[in-house]
Amino acid sequence: MCQNALKCRQPPPVHNPTDHLREVTRDDVLTYIKTLQGHQRHDQLVALRSLFTWAKRNGLIFRNPTSRIKVGQYEYAVLQPLDTKQVDRSVAAATTPATRLILALAAVHAARVAQIGTLMLDDVDLGNRRLTIAGRVRPLDDLTPKLLLDWLEHRRSRWPNTANLHLLINNQTATKTSRASNHWISAAMRGQDATLERLRVDRQLEEALTHGPDPLHLAEVFGLDDKTAMRYADSARALLEQGAEQQLR
View 1: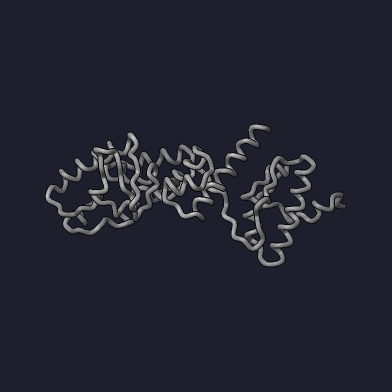
View 2 (view 1 turned 180 degrees about the vertical axis):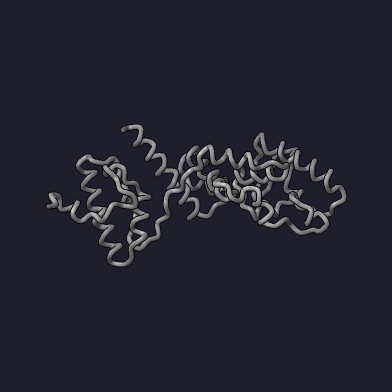
Protein backbone atom coordinates (compact mmCIF):
# COMPACT_ATOMS: atom_id res chain seq x y z
CA MET A 1 0.00 0.00 0.00
CA CYS A 2 1.33 3.43 -0.95
CA GLN A 3 2.26 5.43 2.14
CA ASN A 4 2.84 8.73 0.35
CA ALA A 5 0.09 10.29 -1.75
CA LEU A 6 2.55 12.29 -3.82
CA LYS A 7 4.59 9.23 -4.69
CA CYS A 8 1.39 7.41 -5.62
CA ARG A 9 0.81 10.05 -8.28
CA GLN A 10 4.33 9.74 -9.66
CA PRO A 11 4.50 8.22 -13.17
CA PRO A 12 6.80 5.31 -14.00
CA PRO A 13 10.52 6.10 -13.50
CA VAL A 14 11.47 9.21 -15.45
CA HIS A 15 13.55 8.15 -18.45
CA ASN A 16 15.90 5.91 -16.45
CA PRO A 17 15.22 4.20 -13.12
CA THR A 18 16.74 6.14 -10.23
CA ASP A 19 17.38 5.19 -6.64
CA HIS A 20 17.05 8.70 -5.30
CA LEU A 21 15.09 11.81 -6.22
CA ARG A 22 18.32 13.82 -6.31
CA GLU A 23 19.43 11.81 -9.33
CA VAL A 24 16.51 13.00 -11.46
CA THR A 25 17.60 15.83 -13.78
CA ARG A 26 15.70 18.38 -15.83
CA ASP A 27 16.66 16.42 -18.95
CA ASP A 28 15.08 13.29 -17.45
CA VAL A 29 11.82 15.15 -16.89
CA LEU A 30 11.85 16.68 -20.38
CA THR A 31 12.59 13.33 -21.99
CA TYR A 32 9.69 11.73 -20.14
CA ILE A 33 7.03 14.38 -20.75
CA LYS A 34 7.90 14.59 -24.45
CA THR A 35 6.51 11.05 -24.75
CA LEU A 36 3.11 12.32 -23.55
CA GLN A 37 0.41 14.49 -25.07
CA GLY A 38 -2.61 16.54 -24.07
CA HIS A 39 -4.19 16.01 -20.66
CA GLN A 40 -1.84 13.15 -19.84
CA ARG A 41 1.18 15.40 -20.34
CA HIS A 42 -0.42 18.13 -18.23
CA ASP A 43 -1.44 15.78 -15.42
CA GLN A 44 1.91 14.04 -15.22
CA LEU A 45 3.81 17.32 -15.18
CA VAL A 46 1.56 18.64 -12.41
CA ALA A 47 2.22 15.45 -10.44
CA LEU A 48 5.96 15.72 -10.96
CA ARG A 49 5.94 19.38 -9.93
CA SER A 50 4.05 18.51 -6.76
CA LEU A 51 6.44 15.70 -5.93
CA PHE A 52 9.63 17.69 -6.44
CA THR A 53 8.23 20.82 -4.78
CA TRP A 54 7.44 18.69 -1.73
CA ALA A 55 10.88 17.03 -1.88
CA LYS A 56 12.70 20.35 -2.05
CA ARG A 57 10.61 21.86 0.76
CA ASN A 58 11.53 18.88 2.95
CA GLY A 59 15.22 19.04 2.09
CA LEU A 60 15.33 15.83 0.05
CA ILE A 61 16.70 17.57 -3.07
CA PHE A 62 18.80 20.68 -3.69
CA ARG A 63 17.09 21.77 -6.91
CA ASN A 64 13.67 21.21 -8.43
CA PRO A 65 14.19 19.66 -11.90
CA THR A 66 10.67 20.67 -12.98
CA SER A 67 11.20 24.41 -12.47
CA ARG A 68 10.67 26.58 -15.56
CA ILE A 69 9.08 23.70 -17.50
CA LYS A 70 5.77 24.99 -18.87
CA VAL A 71 2.88 22.89 -20.12
CA GLY A 72 2.38 23.37 -23.85
CA GLN A 73 5.80 24.96 -24.36
CA TYR A 74 8.49 23.05 -26.21
CA GLU A 75 11.45 22.74 -23.88
CA TYR A 76 14.93 22.14 -25.22
CA ALA A 77 17.14 19.71 -23.39
CA VAL A 78 20.23 21.16 -21.74
CA LEU A 79 23.11 21.32 -24.20
CA GLN A 80 26.00 19.13 -23.12
CA PRO A 81 29.70 19.83 -23.73
CA LEU A 82 31.81 17.43 -25.76
CA ASP A 83 34.30 15.39 -23.79
CA THR A 84 38.04 15.61 -24.43
CA LYS A 85 38.31 12.21 -26.10
CA GLN A 86 35.63 13.10 -28.64
CA VAL A 87 37.44 16.30 -29.57
CA ASP A 88 40.81 14.55 -29.69
CA ARG A 89 39.48 12.00 -32.18
CA SER A 90 38.28 14.75 -34.48
CA VAL A 91 41.61 16.55 -34.20
CA ALA A 92 43.37 13.32 -35.14
CA ALA A 93 41.09 12.95 -38.17
CA ALA A 94 42.12 16.37 -39.50
CA THR A 95 45.26 15.37 -41.40
CA THR A 96 45.50 17.97 -44.18
CA PRO A 97 46.00 21.76 -44.19
CA ALA A 98 42.41 22.21 -45.35
CA THR A 99 40.79 19.96 -42.74
CA ARG A 100 42.88 21.40 -39.91
CA LEU A 101 41.77 24.91 -40.85
CA ILE A 102 38.15 23.82 -41.24
CA LEU A 103 38.25 22.21 -37.80
CA ALA A 104 39.58 25.40 -36.22
CA LEU A 105 36.98 27.58 -37.92
CA ALA A 106 34.22 25.47 -36.37
CA ALA A 107 35.81 24.71 -33.00
CA VAL A 108 37.41 28.09 -32.29
CA HIS A 109 35.27 30.55 -34.24
CA ALA A 110 31.93 28.68 -34.16
CA ALA A 111 31.53 28.98 -37.93
CA ARG A 112 28.82 26.99 -39.64
CA VAL A 113 29.73 24.69 -42.53
CA ALA A 114 28.06 27.00 -45.06
CA GLN A 115 29.85 30.03 -43.60
CA ILE A 116 33.18 28.24 -43.91
CA GLY A 117 32.44 27.48 -47.55
CA THR A 118 31.62 31.08 -48.42
CA LEU A 119 34.74 32.61 -46.86
CA MET A 120 36.72 34.67 -49.35
CA LEU A 121 40.42 35.45 -49.43
CA ASP A 122 39.57 39.08 -48.64
CA ASP A 123 37.94 37.95 -45.40
CA VAL A 124 41.38 37.07 -44.03
CA ASP A 125 43.41 39.92 -42.53
CA LEU A 126 46.52 38.34 -41.06
CA GLY A 127 48.28 41.66 -40.57
CA ASN A 128 45.59 42.88 -38.20
CA ARG A 129 44.83 39.38 -36.91
CA ARG A 130 41.20 39.50 -37.97
CA LEU A 131 38.83 37.21 -39.82
CA THR A 132 35.41 38.17 -41.16
CA ILE A 133 32.83 35.40 -40.91
CA ALA A 134 29.31 36.04 -42.22
CA GLY A 135 29.92 39.78 -42.05
CA ARG A 136 31.18 39.77 -38.45
CA VAL A 137 34.82 40.62 -37.73
CA ARG A 138 36.43 38.21 -35.29
CA PRO A 139 39.86 38.53 -33.65
CA LEU A 140 42.26 35.72 -34.44
CA ASP A 141 43.65 33.50 -31.72
CA ASP A 142 47.22 32.16 -31.79
CA LEU A 143 46.38 28.91 -33.58
CA THR A 144 44.23 30.07 -36.50
CA PRO A 145 46.85 32.33 -38.19
CA LYS A 146 49.29 29.43 -38.35
CA LEU A 147 46.66 27.17 -39.87
CA LEU A 148 45.70 29.90 -42.33
CA LEU A 149 49.32 30.35 -43.42
CA ASP A 150 49.77 26.59 -43.83
CA TRP A 151 46.65 26.38 -45.95
CA LEU A 152 47.46 29.43 -48.08
CA GLU A 153 50.93 28.06 -48.81
CA HIS A 154 49.43 24.71 -49.81
CA ARG A 155 46.80 26.51 -51.91
CA ARG A 156 49.42 28.54 -53.79
CA SER A 157 51.65 25.55 -54.49
CA ARG A 158 48.79 23.25 -55.52
CA TRP A 159 46.77 25.70 -57.64
CA PRO A 160 49.08 28.62 -58.48
CA ASN A 161 46.95 29.90 -61.36
CA THR A 162 43.47 29.56 -59.90
CA ALA A 163 41.10 32.48 -60.30
CA ASN A 164 38.81 31.27 -57.53
CA LEU A 165 38.71 33.85 -54.74
CA HIS A 166 37.14 31.58 -52.14
CA LEU A 167 39.45 30.80 -49.25
CA LEU A 168 38.86 27.06 -49.44
CA ILE A 169 39.08 25.37 -52.82
CA ASN A 170 39.65 21.84 -54.08
CA ASN A 171 40.34 20.04 -57.35
CA GLN A 172 36.78 20.58 -58.51
CA THR A 173 36.49 24.28 -57.69
CA ALA A 174 40.05 25.43 -58.47
CA THR A 175 39.15 25.74 -62.16
CA LYS A 176 35.90 27.57 -61.39
CA THR A 177 34.79 30.49 -59.25
CA SER A 178 32.23 28.62 -57.15
CA ARG A 179 32.60 27.65 -53.50
CA ALA A 180 33.43 24.17 -52.22
CA SER A 181 30.43 22.05 -51.26
CA ASN A 182 29.22 21.50 -47.71
CA HIS A 183 29.76 17.78 -48.29
CA TRP A 184 33.46 18.30 -49.03
CA ILE A 185 33.96 20.69 -46.12
CA SER A 186 32.44 18.33 -43.56
CA ALA A 187 33.78 15.06 -45.03
CA ALA A 188 36.75 14.59 -42.68
CA MET A 189 34.57 14.86 -39.55
CA ARG A 190 31.78 12.65 -40.84
CA GLY A 191 31.33 9.68 -38.53
CA GLN A 192 33.00 11.44 -35.61
CA ASP A 193 31.15 12.23 -32.39
CA ALA A 194 32.57 15.75 -32.59
CA THR A 195 31.24 16.78 -36.00
CA LEU A 196 31.75 20.31 -37.25
CA GLU A 197 28.24 21.22 -36.09
CA ARG A 198 28.78 19.77 -32.63
CA LEU A 199 32.15 21.53 -32.37
CA ARG A 200 30.45 24.80 -33.29
CA VAL A 201 27.79 24.29 -30.63
CA ASP A 202 30.42 23.26 -28.10
CA ARG A 203 32.39 26.46 -28.71
CA GLN A 204 29.37 28.64 -28.01
CA LEU A 205 28.48 26.64 -24.92
CA GLU A 206 32.08 26.96 -23.71
CA GLU A 207 31.82 30.74 -24.07
CA ALA A 208 28.68 30.75 -21.94
CA LEU A 209 30.30 28.57 -19.29
CA THR A 210 33.53 30.56 -19.22
CA HIS A 211 32.16 34.11 -19.32
CA GLY A 212 28.87 33.49 -17.58
CA PRO A 213 25.39 32.69 -18.94
CA ASP A 214 24.83 36.15 -20.42
CA PRO A 215 22.73 36.02 -23.62
CA LEU A 216 23.72 39.57 -24.58
CA HIS A 217 27.40 38.63 -24.51
CA LEU A 218 26.74 35.52 -26.61
CA ALA A 219 24.70 37.50 -29.13
CA GLU A 220 27.50 40.04 -29.45
CA VAL A 221 30.33 37.52 -29.81
CA PHE A 222 28.63 35.09 -32.20
CA GLY A 223 25.82 37.11 -33.76
CA LEU A 224 23.14 34.85 -32.27
CA ASP A 225 19.46 35.74 -32.28
CA ASP A 226 17.78 36.30 -28.93
CA LYS A 227 16.15 32.87 -28.72
CA THR A 228 19.35 30.98 -29.54
CA ALA A 229 21.42 33.08 -27.16
CA MET A 230 18.91 32.38 -24.39
CA ARG A 231 19.11 28.65 -25.04
CA TYR A 232 22.90 28.65 -24.63
CA ALA A 233 22.65 30.84 -21.54
CA ASP A 234 20.00 28.60 -19.98
CA SER A 235 22.06 25.47 -20.69
CA ALA A 236 25.19 27.02 -19.21
CA ARG A 237 23.28 28.12 -16.12
CA ALA A 238 21.86 24.62 -15.64
CA LEU A 239 25.30 23.02 -16.04
CA LEU A 240 26.88 25.46 -13.60
CA GLU A 241 24.12 24.83 -11.06
CA GLN A 242 24.51 21.06 -11.46
CA GLY A 243 28.25 21.40 -10.89
CA ALA A 244 27.70 23.46 -7.75
CA GLU A 245 25.19 20.94 -6.39
CA GLN A 246 27.56 18.03 -6.99
CA GLN A 247 30.27 19.80 -5.00
CA LEU A 248 27.89 20.08 -2.05
CA ARG A 249 27.14 16.35 -1.97
